[in-house]
Length: 328
Image: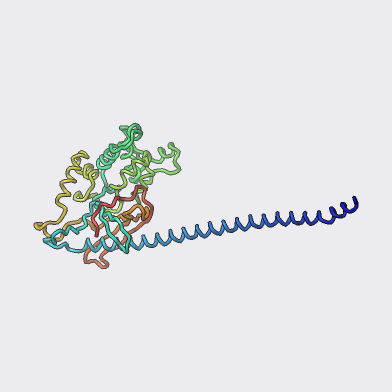
């Protein structure tokens, strides 16, 4: 009897062992297949998102180029005088938003007259100082107000002059190579004109917040220190005309009342130029946060009538604009 039981044990035990091994192998294979399936799914999803991003980017670039052409067409066209009843379709380069639709894509276009900005390379120290003081006065948080040193405007204005002049003599509150070295910076003053407005961020004492408030009112592309105040911002108007910001804002409001053509104005309407800055972004937040900025030269009757000096694409730092502009 014991022999028979022993025989049965020795006969069937290996089979059970093999079945256990097979089960483990099957489970491992299933786990491996699951991992592979998940990997393929994630890869396909990632490739799909990348493809969609590329397509969305291509659509936006094409729409932004169309916005440039529409803007130039409006600028080189002579408005009807007197205008058709209800027609105020004259694009004024004052930065106000205008909605357009291109191939089903709703965009907001903002047009600026480049000559209405202050040139970093030709502006006087007094103009730079006034613009910096206005920007410092626009501190939006208690922390920014607390960190505002009364002497900061003088120091940055002098540092800008030291950055762009060719000598190594330091302005009263300025900064030359030794000051940058003492601050632990791996560079010194350029001692040459600013090549871009973005270069202003490297000037000693410049903060991110102050730069963001100054940049929209500055340029390096105009050829002289003349500022076209007709389309200048309140900050530039205050700096150039030696006004308070409040008085400059009142002038802006009064100016806006007379910018729309009426029956007694003579054509063509003066709209600055020849350099214009154009900003294009999606009008709806649901469409994305893509944006384009371009500098264009427009010369009616020229050959060609316009040229895009540069364009750059990016993402908006601020929320997408509200849908409250005029639609074309």
